[in-house]
Image (cartoon, rainbow, N blue to C red; front, side, top):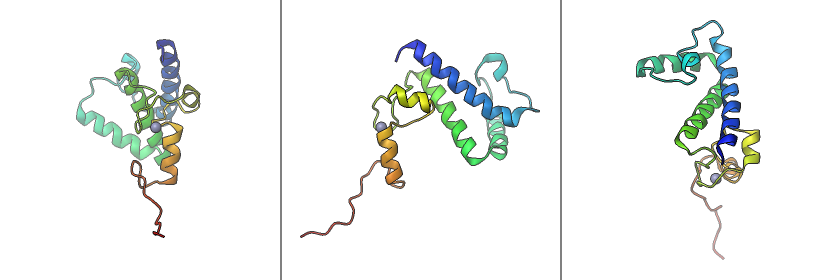
Length: 130
Ligand SMILES: [Zn+2]
């Protein structure tokens, strides 16, 4: 994926993130994020407090989404954005456009939905011999 596209997705991700964070941080300090453009140089303690605070104020769905968004941004920094965390195939851009913070390709996601407990192991349906 070229840098321009990554930059576009990053903008998208960052706006999703500030939307989510905006809900809890309206009256709070906005960490050091507004200064540096990214979460940086916060101690473990500060990060834990921050996470707890957010976790308490965001619903479970929003919290999960936020984590996915942050992971996706981190992957961009690592040059691994757009790669399925399960099968390591490239996630189609069409899918990323809809869900830019997705971790998995459509195929893996479907598998997981069919098999929520076994993400990587395919369990044969109890089939009997003969
Ligand atoms: Zn996959």
